[in-house]
Length: 214
Image (tube, rainbow, N blue to C red; front, side, top):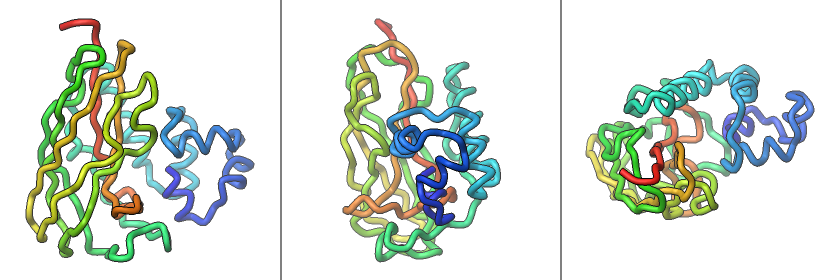
């Protein structure tokens, strides 16, 4: 959401004034510390030209959480041209750079006991025309706050030639509270700058249901 706003050249103060939401609330939402309301997501969609991509993704994620279904991230990909944000993208960013999720373990809605560690893997294809070097799968928002699905701040993405599929493995830990929780990740450089700041590559994520026991 922050990337959309910055791409439109709208300061956070102006976004708060125009939307009617508090600036601090918008900041917490954009940093992944507070879940956005549907109304706020709709406002971002309409104001920054996301063409309903954010709303559609939220709808599918909420449906998966309520029903315990596995919604493939491939179904959530939005074909939106990348948005360049000047200095906020890596120096080797290129418009022909693409990533595609082609497989994963721990399907969305998997039940996990409280505080239990588990390994999640994602298979990601370099579907663009540029080789990947020194890339990371970086957590968006807090990686270890109480009540959140805990994870490393980032894991290395293996180097990949165009067309190659690589596997990223990560050990996560379920929160202490019972209920649904989600962790979001994006592909970045070592400095944390996004390779795909637009919506052509939605966040890679993990959604689980925490239970008392299985």
